[in-house]
Amino acid sequence: MESALDYQTAGALLEWQHELGVTDAIGDAPIDRYALPDAAPWLQKKQAPASAKAVTPAPEQQEDPVKVAEEAARRAETLEGLRAAMGAFELCELKKGARNLVFCDGVAGARVMIIGEAPGRDEDREGRPFVGRAGQLLDRMLAAVNLSREASVYITNVLPWRPPQNRDPKSEEIAMMQPFLRRHVELAAPDFIVLMGNISCQAVLGRRGITRLRGNWAEAYGRPVLPMCHPAYLLRQPIAKREAWADLLSLQAKLKGAS
Image 1: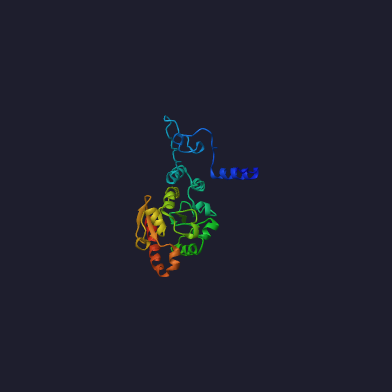
Image 2: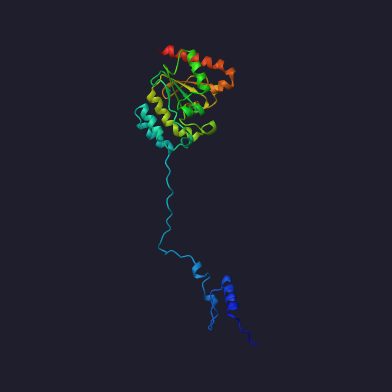
């Protein structure tokens, strides 16, 4: 005995079959399933013509920060021009987290140029190198041999922007700022260079180990170079002040001998 389905039940069964993936109703004619495609038409990927060649987009070329820095530094003809070039340099990530570009302090054209490492919190806030406790100690050290940033010393850093949490600069950060430092020395034209700390020695001399390097005159940028312990190190290790005094006397002797 045949039982008729009401339209609600029939509709529910049809919806259930649709959810299961049924796409074709059973017809009167038989279907050769072996002749059907492996996948439904809407799941098949469109095949590109045989003559079409796959084109892989070329990777976006990134600028070499060292080359960009070299070109920018080369075009700077004055210290103010160099400051502007460094301020326009956008490839150093340190710039994004710094308040100020710390360019220089002291007298341009002075016989002694001091190269520090990188700005700290106080330097970043004021935009001048060596203005914190280490800077105050440096001023006293210079005064002991009749030097001062107001009259006879020019001061800068390897990096013009403060690293986060005062961490050591990375080698790639030093490398990209070296062209600016080299040009800075050329434009300032000092007779003698004092390298304060390990980072300065790494950037200028390509060597680290300030306790071994300090007090030993070297040459870089065509000028005599004297490595010294950073004043911040002297604050942590007061016993090293005796060696720093010997280094200052060596600098004083060089100045007198070359005068």
